[in-house]
Amino acid sequence: MDDCCSTKAGVRHSPFNYIPLLLIPFFITIYFYLERGVDFLVYAVLGLDRSSHLTESIRFFLYDTPKVLLLLTVIVFVVGIIRSYFSPEKTRKALEGKPLFVGNVMAACLGIVTPFCSCSAIPLFIGFVESGIPLGVTFSFLIAAPMINEVALVLLFGLFGWRTALLYLATGLSIAIISGWVIGKLKVERFVEQWVYEMKAGDIRMPEEQVAFGDRIQAGYTAVVDIVSAVWIYIVIGIAVGAAVHGYVPENFMASIMGKAAWWSVPLSVLIGVPLYSNAAGIIPILQALLEKGASLGTALAFMMSVIGLSLPEMIILRKVIKLPLIVIFLSVVATGIMIVGFLFNWIY
Image 1 (cartoon, helix red, strand yellow):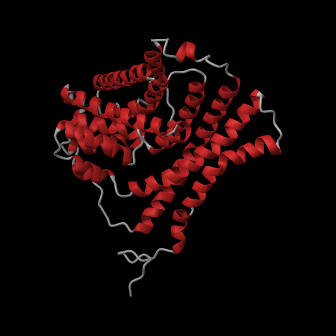
Image 2 (tube, helix red, strand yellow):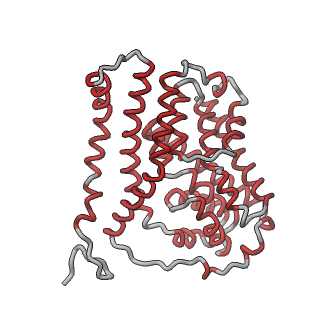
Image 3 (tube, rainbow, N blue to C red):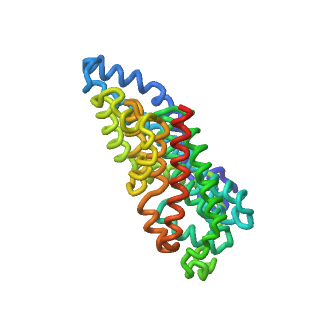
């Protein structure tokens, strides 16, 4: 007899597996009432002075930390369910046989929803190249996947609003698509290590299997545990630094070094950001405070994109499969795209 909690493989799912799904409305309610709760705690319960720099920093930290963590938990859970439908193998199959520019667009979009980290760069790169996917399309995916992820978008939405989040999404996709297209036009296949072309598809193909919705909910819960447990400390540190900047750095101080008037601020921010390694969780809360103190949006976005999208560990890992000239080309093309975005938004805003 069939059971609503059974999968095709005969595995029964407890109703408790659906509890994470039912908790979403509870988390959303807390999120919307959080600000007034923090204000009551800071001003009524603790009785702190509203005009104090210390009070500004404390309120900033107590409000932004749970706000970001709550929002991140909900979005990562939903995205984790969505990602269960997009395995690397399905992504590779979807990109096979696509022409260059169409492939660049598809690869960049798929990079947003496909699980990816620096440690998986090599097997993904090998799988794409071995399957005949153009090199430029492969790079569009490798650029978009780490740069445009749910952590970055959630933090930007939570701290700056939906317009800035959509702005980052649109510019990040544009950089991934155009950079991959340019790399593809440069015909740089000779800079790929020869052993990559000698790999067989059987070395990296993974079998596809049917997954029940209960398992997808569990995948969302696992994504929350894995991602939030990995980034929460960066969020707390980043917000703590941002709180200090928010409370104690004089108004418009950052305008002198990261403002529109300092034309060199965009290329300098990219040059500083490329060798650094951080993730969105650590860098975005700091940028929020810097923007409040006079840093321009274009310069801040350029710095964030260079830190997140051109991480040093990924370059070191990719060196195992591509030669140094291609790494230099990759860095140059993407960094140029990031600087154009920075100048553009400094001009618009």
